[in-house]
Length: 124
Image (cartoon, rainbow, N blue to C red; front, side, top):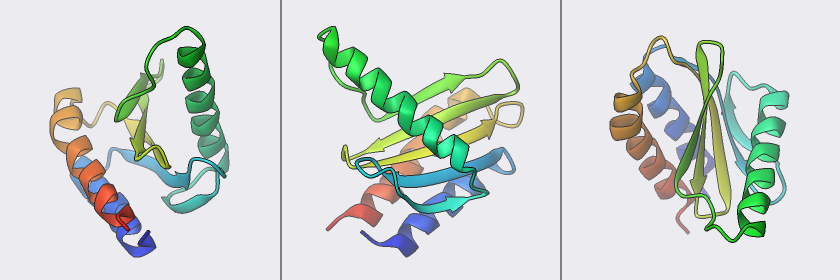
C-alpha cells in the first residue's frame, strides 16, 4: 500500500471532476480506519462503511452476489455518494455535487481512471 499514491488517486478524481468533488475518503474496509482523504467528514466515512456493510450482509442473506466495483447512491439534494470497492480490502467514498458532472462522464471516464489509480497504489 502506497499512501502517497492513494492521495494522488484522490487528486486525480478531484481534477477530473473539476469542482464537483465535495469530500472523499479512502479507508481500510476491515478496520474502518481512514488512510487518506480530501475535505474529510468522519460522519460520511462512517456512513459509507455502514451502508456497504449492511447492504453486503443483506445481499448475502438473500443469496445475491456481492457488490461489484462501485455503487452510486443518488441523494434527494444535488449530490450523490460514490463508493468504490478495491480488492475487497479498501473502500473509497466520495460525496459529489451532481449539478457539476454528468453521470455518463463519471461512469465511463472518472470512475475507471480513479479506480485504476487506486488499484496501482494498493498493489503489493
